[in-house]
Image 1 (cartoon, rainbow, N blue to C red):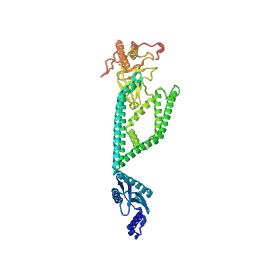
Image 2 (image 1 turned 90 degrees about the vertical axis):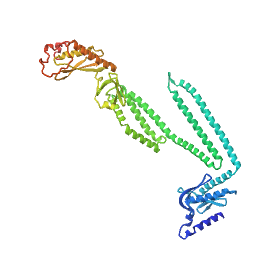
Image 3 (image 1 turned 45 degrees about the vertical axis):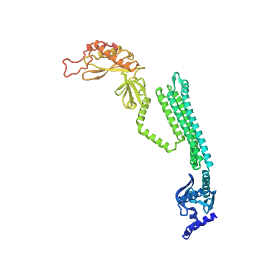
Image 4 (image 1 turned 30 degrees about the horizontal axis):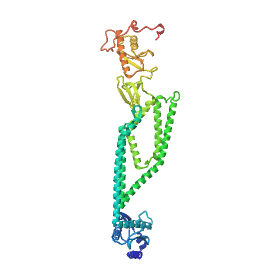
Length: 542
């Protein structure tokens, strides 16, 4: 009878449309898409309407259904919820009254079965009817209040228990740290800063404590809200959110395990290849194998090879890392690449210069060099800069790019055996026999401790200017620290002055404003003035 009444009502409403050639049955029962509206009764979502049906918009249908259902719930009669089909739609009946109609267009773009949707809405409506009855039962409310009080007592006990456990653990932590500190040592030196470790563990305990407190509070609130009919949907939603979160985390962990396993395998493969390449390069660095691979170039070559292997492994493992396909991960990768491309150009240039210095073997630690205006002993050749200690005890840090762009004089490469070259320049007038000057310079070099007798010190006339010739003394010194080399030069200069004073020769560079009264030349009988010695007959041609 109810179904016949609703059908007659629909036909009577749509009778004016039949004369205009409109598909009455289809448009009447299917509805027309409209602005969605949600039907909510007692904090429970019953159904979401999407169609304008029989001239009523979804909002109007929600308003009318709400009024019918609330009026029925205010009554004392026992209400039965049922579903009846009507053409392409389904009626949801509450007792003897029509609560609402679910049409095909109410299912939205996703579509589906109106019968199934109506049954789900009817199930939610039955739950509302049952909870309305429970809300009117004093016995049920007292029982719910008793359960809530009991849950609150248990909650308070658990919170106090977590606080007590945290305090006891914090009290035992210093003793445990002292015991472990005595065990974790390398000789007499502790490997870990126990104060820092204590701070980290104490903060972790505090974080764990508050995590447990929040979880207990969440569960207590969800349980208490679920005891009362009106707030039960909120409690159920809290449980659903927690379960969904745990399920999401668990699914994410399970889905990430295969990718992490592949990344770990790639890591171990790269580690094995890196170790094999290191041992192979050590064997290839033995004398007579490769000229360019020596003891000096072995370490940077090993590092470059290992870096290339690990970069390739990172590229291979990147797609398997959790979250590598997300937009956030891609954006971070682009940002890092942009930062490196903009800010690391000078760093890359310095590193390239360091590699050039290493493999070209321009200089190495222990050699005495002059780079531009800087002179000293090389103490370290790094990837980005080179450290030089001067004869005055100063430490100079020179960028490798500056060294590659400057002329480098190496005083330690041309020596016979170990040591370095020491040279100094004096200018003496033309009226002093050059043989005498050379002999005095060699004599001064022999008197200086630290200058080797073999190879013999040599004197070269490097220039004949208008007023005087230029003499350069070149000798080889024994290996020493930078400061003794400065002392060696000072001793050599002092001995040169002493020898010249002994033989009455002035260390002076004459300059003339006019022609001198006496010509500046050396007669033949003065050619071998002491300490110069006349060579033997067999050496006359020299």
